[in-house]
Every structure is written in C-alpha cells, then in structure tokens.
Length: 523
Image (cartoon, rainbow, N blue to C red; front, side, top):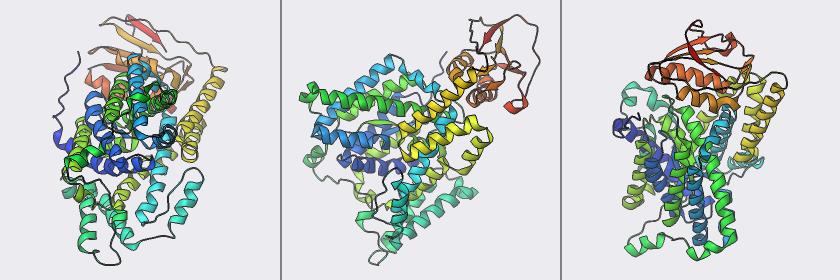
C-alpha cells in the first residue's frame, strides 16, 4: 500500500533549502538563456515551470528541474537554424510530447544500467566545469570561459583582468559560506542559510561601502532582470510558439534531438539525485519522463526554454537539507514571486556572490576524496570513472558518459569470458524465507534486476543473501545491498542475513544459511 506523502511535514527545512536553490537557480536561469541566444526571461519561465509543475508531478524528492547547461549548444544552434525563437518553441513543445510518450512506453528504466563510477565521474566532471567557469565572475573578469582544452587557458587569461571590488565581495562570500555552518548558533537558524547571508552582505558591501569609489561593482557585474512597468511590457516578454511551423521537418529534427538529450540528462541526474538521498528513496523514472514532458510542453507554451533535471540545483538542494519535493516547488514559487515583485532589488545582487556559491558546489562535486575512493576500489572502478570525468571536462557530458559506459561494458565482457554467468528468478509467496544466491559474476548490468527483487520483498519477511559462490560483485550492487539492509529493510521490518561475503566486499556476514523452506533467486 502506497503511503500518502505529506508535502508540508518538513516545511521548515524545505523552505530553507528551497530558498538556497532559488538563489542558485536565478543566475543559472539567466546565464543559460544568455548562452543559448534566447530572451533572458525565457530562462526564468523554464525555472518557474521546472520548480512548480515538474516539482509537483515528479516522484523525486531531491531533483530540481530547469534550463540546463547541457542543452545550451543545441538550443543556440537550433534557434539560429530555425530562424526565429517562436519556431524553436514549437520544437520544444513537440519534444515535450515525445518525452511524455517515452514515459508511457516505460523507457525510464534505462537509468538503472548506468554504473556508479560513470555517474560519479559525470558529477565530478560537471563539478570541475562549474568551478572553472565561475572563476572569471569571481574575479570580475570579462573573459568568457570556453570548453575543452581552451577552458584552462581562458581561466588563466581571466587573472589578467581583475576588479578588486569583485574579488573582495567574492572572498567575503566564500568566507561566509565556509564559516556559517560551522558555528552551532548560526547553523541552528535554518531559515537564514549561508547563501542568503552571503547575498545580503554582498549587496550591503557594494551599496554602502563601495558606492562611488573605485571598488564599486557596476551593473555589468550584477544580476540583470527585465523590469516591466506596464501590462503591455509584461505581455511583450512572453513569446508564444509558432504553430504554423509544425509541418517543418527541421522543427521535428530539433524536437527529437532535444527530447533524447534532455531525457538522458534527466535520467542521469535522477540516478545521481537518488544516490545523494540519505533516505535512499528510489524515483520512478517513467513518471519523471512524463513530468519532464508536461513541463516542457507548458514551458514552450509560455515562451520558456527546454528543461531537464539539473545536477547543480539538485546538489544544492540536497546540501541545503531538503527533505521532500516541496523544496523544489518552493524554489519555483520564489522565482516567480521575485521576478514579478522585486526585480529592482534582485538586480543589485553581485555575480561575485553567486559565483562563490557555485564555486563551493563545484568543489563538493569533484572533491579529492571522490577520486581517492575510486582509486582504492581498483582499476575496474577507477578507469571508467576517470575516463568519464576527463571526457565530460574536455568533450561534453554525453560523450563522457558514452565513453565511461563503453569501457565498463568492455570490462564486463572481458570478465564474462572468464567467469560463468547465470540468472534465474522465480516468484515467491508472503511468509516464505526468501533466499537470494548471487552468481559468480555480478555486474552493474544486474543492478536493475537486483533492485527490483529487493524492492518486491514484502514487509515482515526474512531474506538470506548468499555470496559464497561469487568471485566479483560490482560496487553498485554492494551499495544496493548495504542500503537495503541499513535503511529499506528496517523501514519494512525485514530481517536480512548475509552469508558468504568476502572481506573485500566490506559487508559483514550476519547469519548462517537456515534449513527452512525457501524460494530461491539466483542473480
């Protein structure tokens, strides 16, 4: 029986985290729109719809949707090729319909076949890109950081164009973000997150200390939102799709491209978000595709950019202490309220403060301990991880993930030539002692089947997981078993006995095989 979710049960922590995500999402919505060659307000529309509409429809508790950096190149090229933004919106509308269809076709299960090391490599690569791309903003430089190998030379070049006032605000903001949560009294004030304090202090310093001096941060380095003063001006901001272009083959090609890329990025982010979740709640990826499809349809009808679930915002949401998807909805509501009521005040926020927030998010995604962890796991874990990481940084996200997957699959195929693999599954009845025997080779390709098996075990039952015959178990599968035993099993009152696990699996054996009648799963 599905438990009814109370969205307001954790309102205090969700409001605090929603506020933090709002502060992170605002510049991202504007920056992605600018990089995409689209009207700035279209990025805000996408953020609002991603927060409120997708937030309510999605089953993910941590994922946050909005305009994605991974789509900027596609959007920029598409707007240019199609010749008009309203024609492009028609493609976004069709892309949403395609995603909705994929959800009903249950195509979301593909996310289960992405191994942990590839996902973590992707996150680390994105973290490095975020960090490096924020350095010019943190310095007040006009250098635009490119991609690939050029990213490093551009970062170096940005140090030759520094504005001292911007650097000071960046330093103050980073100090607040690092120190605030380490002081118990301040950390207890959840409705005053460090990011909010950093923003307020950044505005205060620039307005009351730097104003009229050589340190003043000018409007060029502040948030810039449209400020409509009449209903007509507001209406002019909203652009509708050009439905007459629906018969244009080029529109359909763009739509299919957006649908495929956005869906893959979303599924990767959902997988990553589930891994961040301390409660290890699994998201229904088919429902997520439907939610994203509806979100893109509504965004297109309002003149917004295409959206995906976004790692940066989802990570910020998790780090800020979000408990449920209400945090995502709150961030969308705050985006809407802010652009309608206080755009003049928001336009005083220095990019330096927002860059400081993103610098720390980038670092957390790619901190050295992550690299050390996969190095210690051995070459079969480290090589796909580092290959994915490098390709994401120097090529792009999809190529990076593709390379990591290819290397992982080749490693598994090589292993399968040496080790037999067997898979058999039979149904069980409530009350049986459920016995799961793991095969000799348990790879990430078995992750979906094992996840489904563990999820289907009824409450108040007993399960014995036997690894006595295994010679290799993928890190992903070990994580699943650990999470099942420590969290899910306790919630469902399931007694778990582990038998035959080797020391290197880092799973303590908790019981001996019992001579009960049982139903067996060989996986």
